[in-house]
Every structure is written in C-alpha cells, then in structure tokens.
Image 1 (cartoon, rainbow, N blue to C red):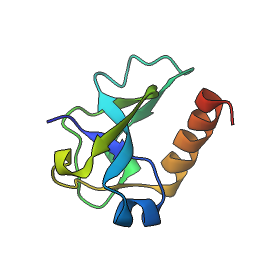
Image 2: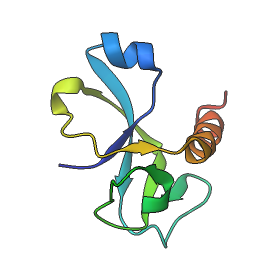
Image 3: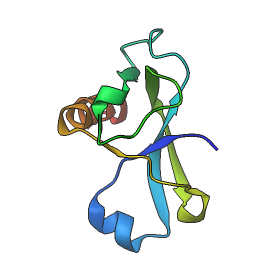
Length: 95
C-alpha cells in the first residue's frame, strides 16, 4: 500500500477504469522544490492523517493505475495545495 493523490477531473474519476496519480512518499523535510511538494496533515481537509507528517509529493512520478489498485480514501487536499500541485504539474508537463 502506497499513498497517492488522484490528479484528474471528477468526470474521469467517475467513468474511467484508470486514474492518474502522483505518489506520496518519504520525508517532507527533504524536498527538491523543482519536482517535489511538501504536504502535511494541515493540507488535508477533515481528520485524515498522513502516515509520515510531513510527506512529499513527487511531481515527476506521474502514474496511471487501475482503480482496482486503489485502497481507502484518506481525505481530500485543500484547494490551496491543489493549486500548488497543478502549477508544478504544468511545469513538469510543459503546458
């Protein structure tokens, strides 16, 4: 089991068999700001908790996985953090 962030629109989440995700891993105190973003429990709405707080999102590690591989939903990122991830993703993909 490895935590991920689903990074696609709601319609795709509802109808597609696969989802695009970014991995969450390791120590959020050690990040390379060019392709990693620190996330903490404060970045998640509700009572969800990361197993490692802070953690880091690896923007360069975009994966497409089958929905069957998804486990439980632990929460939703706050809008401010989603905006940061979107900007990093745009740079990563040269959009």
